[in-house]
Image 1: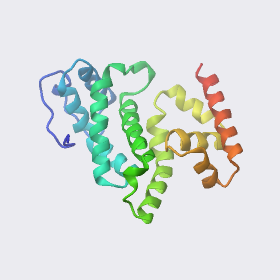
Image 2: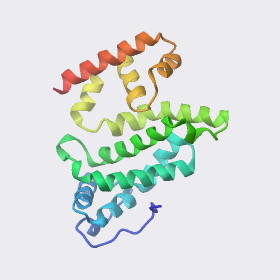
Image 3: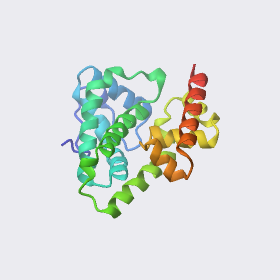
Image 4: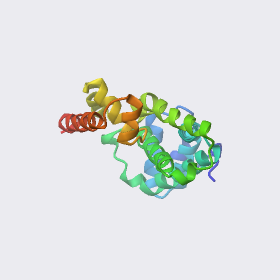
Length: 203
């Protein structure tokens, strides 16, 4: 398990920078470049800078400390392996990092067996947490590129909310319909219409 409080190494340019909880974007960007180049100090910078916050996001989504730690560990492995895919021109380094963590958390949420030991009350808390993630983490972090943020803001509220519930919080169309108390066809139509508008806006 990677310790979120681990001391960063000083064997690379990224390691020479003092990582802080709210590390500047250029520090995280340099850290990703270090990871892509195979320098472990880059990963240490990310863990020191964002480890506590990343673990907090995972815990809010999963409501179990063991699963949150597992999600963070897996996310760090993916960040290390995929750092070469990061492109600064498409979004912030911080948004890219948090998106990888959130995707891992959503995979765990979709795996019912992993959550089968939770009590009904805890399962309800997980569901509530998923919805709470949408306006906070989903909107501010996952939106990433300014253009995507602007395009999301340009959607009508129902379309934007259903898209965020489906693609950020990981709800199925049926779950959204039940939660919003609207027909399933309406949910599908809102998501389809919103995704078309996003594609046109981003093109």
